Length: 298
Image 1 (cartoon, rainbow, N blue to C red):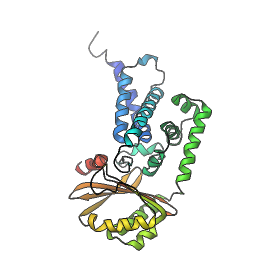
Image 2 (spheres, rainbow, N blue to C red):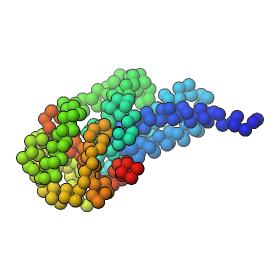
Image 3 (tube, one colour):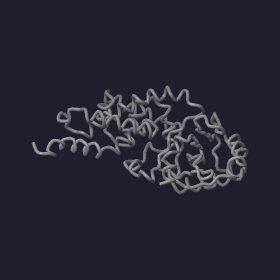
């Protein structure tokens, strides 16, 4: 046998895998809310694909989607247990969708920070059904097959997830309004302007700071317009004078990267409805800021 004849099947296997890799990552990320965990799952799917009798697989994409989804559900179940011991509020790990436009490209559905946060309250199977349907438009038959359940149950899982999100989330605003409100909020937060803060925040706004235990991050969410505005005003003189800000994109929405001495210290994103800002999300855990740190040095 001449050199080079043998590796051909592996090349095909690699090609098949790479062609669906962005989708596999997109599914895993939406189920897990963590880019690092999603990468681990995709890596594990690759290992399994290499060890599979590929001649017996008619549709590599369908096979890999099923493997990735099931691995994600398993990891989500153990992640829930780990998150119970997490210090302070847990927020999804943001992804720089400007660097990775394909992540939001299939459909931007279920990639926003606030949606990923709300999906945390669902069990992993409900969350997965919702992701497959809303973000990737899979038919119910296919969702049922991936989850090993009936079509009727798959439909029920999706509608339960939709209902949960509808109960928790008011009508959204368009991207330009979202950006404008975040700009107004940022300048009011920096100056500690209570009147303006109270104007842009909804009555039952919640502010979450995910510091993973770092000093200075509030360990419990701050709830309600009066509390949140006073908290931000008190926080302003300590936090903002030595900070620089840079506009970035996080999970398909405008966000603000906060830098101190050239180091990324926080990513600020908000969820905005027709009532104003409903959720303020401060990602301060250094491990979760990694994609933005990379883009600063890159």
